[in-house]
Image 1: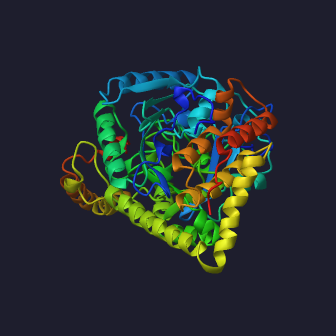
Image 2 (image 1 turned 30 degrees about the horizontal axis):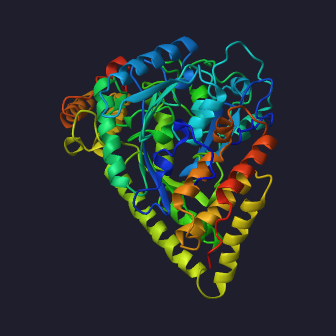
Amino acid sequence: MQQPKCSHCGNARCKHGAPSVHVLDVAGWEIHKQQFVCEAIAQQLGILPQKQQLELSLPPDVLANLLGDLKPGTAAPATGDPTRPRPQETICTGCRLTLGAFKMRGRVGCPRCYETFRPQLVPLLERVHDATAHRGRFPGRPARIAPDPVDLTELRTRLQTAIAQERYEEAARLRDSLKKLSGGLEPDRDDGSGAS
Amino acid sequence: MSQLPSIPSDLTLGEWLRADGPDSDIALCTRVRFARNLLGYRFASLLDAEESRDLTAYLVQQVGQLGMQEPLRVLDLMSMSELDRELLVERHLISRELAAAERPRAAAHDEPERVALMLNEEDHLRSQVFRSGFRVEEAYAAAEALDDKLISALPIAFSEEFGFLTSCPTNVGTGLRLSVMLHLPGLVWAEEMEKAANTCQKIHLAVRGMYGEGSRALGDFYQVSNQVTLGRSESSLVDDVRVAVAQLIAWERRVRLALLAGERRPRTLDRVWRALGTLQSARILSSEECLNGLSAIRFGVQQGLLPDLSAQDLNRLLLLTQPAHLQRLHGKSLEAAERDALRASLVRGALAGRGQGAL
């Protein structure tokens, strides 16, 4: 079987080691482009966390081309280390993954990332799956008694909007509806915890 | 096949090439995979070596207590040689990515190779169930039963909204990937494969090569699988693949008959006998040339053109001529040129004298 070659240095095995990192560029319905890169190259690109501080020496257009961006029409950051938080950048409290690193890697770092990066994830899920909510089975419960996830998603969105616009009475009502619909399993989102 | 050397027990045909299931002339194997992650650990790509070791040890311990009907053989991939890991890849028991990774990780499989688990892959746990031939419902039912055991034993990351949470958002939701490995020389020779692949993509099915993502479709072998994992129930995803693959199989059968009729027949027969002649005579055979030749001969066997060869013979050759299997047979690591010569010798021995009484 052929060993995959590093898309950056072209070798199946080089001074950086075997190309063990699989980079997927997801576009529309399908995996648009996929490449393997060495671990050290992946660290330089911000796909993997750096074991030690490395200079980001690749030009920004190479970065953008190699990794793409989750949001069409926006380029990868031109300078700086995307794995290090910039001022006021969203960062997951569960695994410390930054929004920049998530965009570069195309992978989340822990269950909580799904809540932390919800604004970026929901449009991505819509493009990849043409859906944003689970309709399959639930662990420990037969699927037939699962609540309709479409309703839940819509209610959650309305709840977030109501909170953001300080319409607290409506927010309380929506929260009650959510709890009722989810069979009392709707998590309390005030503590910042999300998907579990 | 008497000319084949004696085969070590771990090189016998696994479930995926046993080819004793329904429609196994075209559908070699059905595979169901679930991607799952545990609460309490970061996802695999963020784990440091110590966390990877802890996670892997915990998973190995839990997997050992699952109470499977067929006991699982647990393999520490860190302590295995690269060749042994490649052997598992060629048998479809682990992914190429898991084999190449350098972090602590493990795998487990049962003796008939119908169940395989990958521990600390891109997701913490990937369970796989294989069934020979085109057996979608049976494979899914077995995979779901295994998944139920895993869910009961482990704190699986799940969100009511997004479903089973995975490292890559392309797998979230059901975490289900159902794939059927198909041998489609008819569609390729009739130049209808591109049309078939495009049709699959329109209904959100992925068409990939023999070893999944990133692999080329060597030897006219294709894996057809669901692309979408979110927003659909498992049963509707299973139905999609089942219906589409049934149509592909019917399409392949129609094309095969057309290729063996009228003006197209001589060219089709020529392809089969030319391949047989080449493989019976070659002194050097690359993996690619060998797979393509075996594909044409397999077509001939399935269509009754070569009665003194069986599909099992061909499937065995398909497996044993893979690089890691060849090296295991030979008992040592070999350079590519040595492998090509050994492959040619193995195939010559197995095919010697075959096809003499044919049409």
